[in-house]
Amino acid sequence: MNHSIIVPIYNVENYLKECLDSIINQSYKDFELILVNDGSTDNSLKIAMQYAKQDSRIIIIDKPNGGLSSARNAGLEFIKPLREKLQQALKAKTGIQTLSEVNSFNKQKKNIDINTLNKHFTFSKNLIKTDLENVNSILLQEMPNDHFIQFVDSDDMIDINATKCIRDNESELTIFQVKSTNEKGEVIKNMFSEQFHYVENYKNGMEIAHIVLQRTGYSFYFAYQGGFKAEVLNRYNLRFTHNIMHEDNDFGLILCMLSQEVKMLKDEMYIYRIREGSITSYIDKKTEIPMPKKLPPYLQKVRDKFPDLTYLKIRGAYRIYSYLIIYLNIYKFLENGGVNSWVNKSYYRLLYTWLNQYRYIIELLDENEKRDLLHILMHTNEKYLNLSQNIDKVLSQG
Image 1 (cartoon, rainbow, N blue to C red):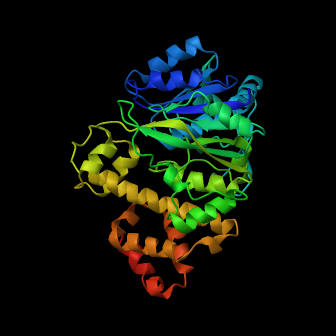
Image 2: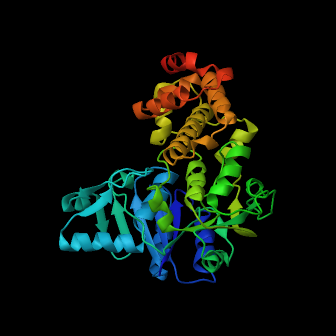
Image 3: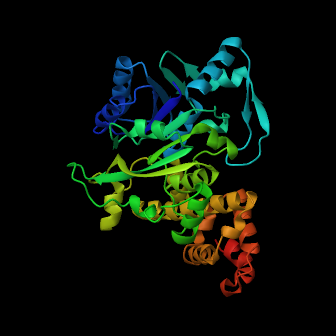
């Protein structure tokens, strides 16, 4: 069994069964299904446990709420080969070595002792419990060779041949298309295929990424639109960026650039559900909704900085912050990978526009992020942006 399907779960009791049924009934059967309960407060965990009792392929990770990125990352750290490695270390009462830096070419390792492992992780037959919101704060393991990863969101579904499609292609990265539906099952416009339709002939992922960088403003959402070989992540210690929205933008683009073999298909193998009453629907209608009694930590961070903002404006502010982090991450990868010549004028123009319109967002950056931003601004010679004269002003007036 060298294929893992990872499903992050948070308060989806009305949709989870349909999602899980679409997975366990795949035509390709030889996979494990990792369900990551991200602090659900409804019956989602109960439903997941019921399925785990009926299907030995299912493993459940139960963790505090940390968001979609943290849930997907937790699933990655507990795919079968890595899970067995941890269990062996616990049984032998020894520690393990783990990579020291996420999203980096740095391969330096650090030791995690047995006491730390015992403190934060508890294993049973098909259940792993942890008190860590962000598992990567401790664990960042090298991925095994010849192991496939596939993500499915817990309110969506996949075609019965989706997993078989990934395995049949045997590519480092397989991308298929997405069929968007409403809650009645009615197909609506496929907004996900539009970023790919112009890519017909290509040599590798770098060629596709170059096209995306030049044409779409650094937007390349990939999480559930296919599958990939786990070993590709090792080339950059790649994981989803913790605590941002649109977390699959930088992950997807960097994953594509790391992949030497990419197979892009026209088949619609993923069924994306647009939920009525979701936060996206409210935003589209520009209708305000009440402030929740409890905000997730990343949104509470915004509210602490800007207490007068409404709920939708808090989410809007964090969305802008997230895009800024995504752009910083992509720039860092391109620069460290020696291909920063791909960054064109549109990148700096977009960055400059955002900093002028939403200068207050800089208050949400930590010191390292501010230094990265300053580094980018200092290394552009685009005179029409006049950035060299505004760097200190932009950073000081955030």
